[in-house]
Length: 188
Image (cartoon, rainbow, N blue to C red):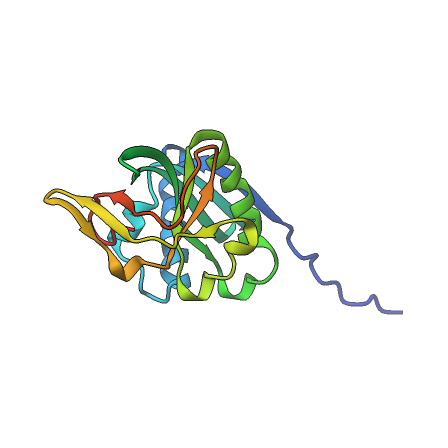
């Protein structure tokens, strides 16, 4: 009698939250490489820089990183007042692991951070992810968008319709203008 071949049990994914300060060099390199792959090479050094300085949600299977998302602090200008914003950056799941709830798990963890620490959450959704966020309670900003640049307030028409917000206790009229703070690369 021969034993049936044994197959290793599938690894259970593990979600972990950590601050950028606690990411060692190999973890940073793995996250950056993952996002480069997820965005098919359309992920710049500036995009990576935007994802640093906040809380990272990491999904691992064993030692392998399969998902990343981050929330960083920004200021948004709404109705003449600055709002402390938890801005979501670098959301991605490895292609062969999508559709298994990893993105939702990371967003659940980061939404808790946003609701606990910020006036509101915001993100710029790609066309492929635009349906994911409204199903989670994020609302598409319907008003004009802008950036408060070193030379003043400038419209960002190309971002109109792509910005989503997670409202906190601050009442918002989603048809008003919303402006982000200045940064290099994509401002939203």
